[in-house]
Length: 267
Ligand code: DGL
Image (tube, rainbow, N blue to C red; front, side):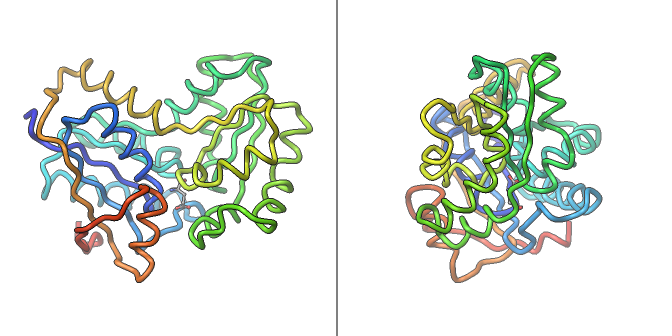
């Protein structure tokens, strides 16, 4: 079993930042990454659709790749589908929201935490619940930032347009005197530079990738799942667009030489 891979998925390539953190935390683990590039964005879809997508991807992972566990490296899917699929499949399934909430609670000094994410993630209230479970007195200020995903997809990570959008979105959170900002979407770590500039030095920016990798390590040990295979990562997507290479480079910091397309609706 120790040679069986870990499945990691996201609506697109943003989850590659989580895959990268897992490889750093557990270099011996073999990963299978699936980016649902044909159906991105998830952030504007209904909860029923998000659950259906998650089921299909986990079925693909189990049937074709025999994964020993799954990481839902997408905030929107973690918010809407995690609980349902956890009850349906007999393997450990981990999301990014709980680890992100832990990281935020450890980072805050004044108990005022800002959370930004897609419309779906913010509407679910999943971060507010996860943070309050650990730190009931925390004041959580949430804001949906629907323009961030298209900006990242277009490679507009810095510059006046992105800064203006970020200032508008962060204004109410900064007014509420947050000292910690949770990046509740896998696309947002790429905007860190702009967000840090707009938020100022006093605000700590929390990205759940590293915390998720640590939590996965801990979870596998707790479930007695054998670890340490041969490392490496195989990449799969539901659509191979012309922009794939450029986007993979952006999220992973290096190119991907081999990627296969999967007809995910069949699962
Ligand atoms: N990956 C999604 C998330 O983390 C953001 C992109 C989308 O809307 O699909 O919520």
